[in-house]
Image 1: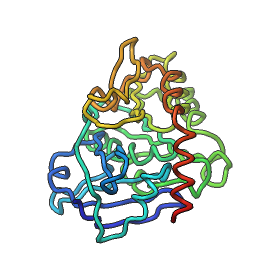
Image 2 (image 1 turned 120 degrees about the vertical axis):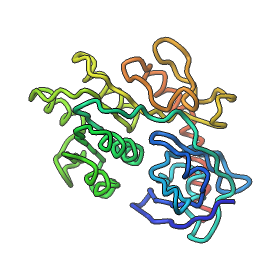
Image 3 (image 1 turned 135 degrees about the vertical axis):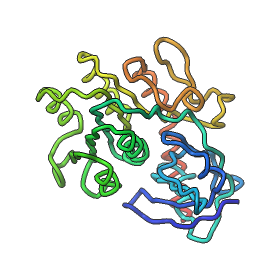
Length: 275
């Protein structure tokens, strides 16, 4: 059992949770994740470790309510417990001084960008962050990302905050202005990551994406999180979650991500009805 130290609502569907997990906090590196279950009947949910405090023995998670499992997790209160938590899982992000680095986040991807952006800045990179959301209410962790960035650009689809438009428009403008980065690290919806990859490909810009395909055991045994990269089958939980964006088959990834949307929607409706 893992004690919940904090459960803070960031917006209507996203909450931040601090959990007591000393062994994970001591070993975690940027880019890694945990798998949690709210209770003994809960589904297994992979979540990026957004931050860790080894002295306090705690880790920070950001969760978006999408299905029954995440809704159940969101109902947990401070002082309560999560039934299962295992990690850190996955390969850590490659952190070194690349030079000019762009971190591009869409929606909930801001939670995954933050620990990598922080580490890249500490490694000596000049960090430019481009963060987007559908509207102002859905923007998360702006202050935290701003604090580790040399520059930050905010976009919203509806223009309610920052500049109207999408993150790839800012990325293209910067590149066209001669600010060609040594690395682009992108996290967000599949369509956004694919657009970033196609934008950077002609320029030969090294581009890394953090992928979150459907996942069950987190150890490579179930094969659920398989994807194709460079024509080879890979497993996000053990080969990733970071991959060379120019080698990822995003069409296949999008199809796999959409396979159970109907079931997820039905489970969510049942969970909301039972609330």
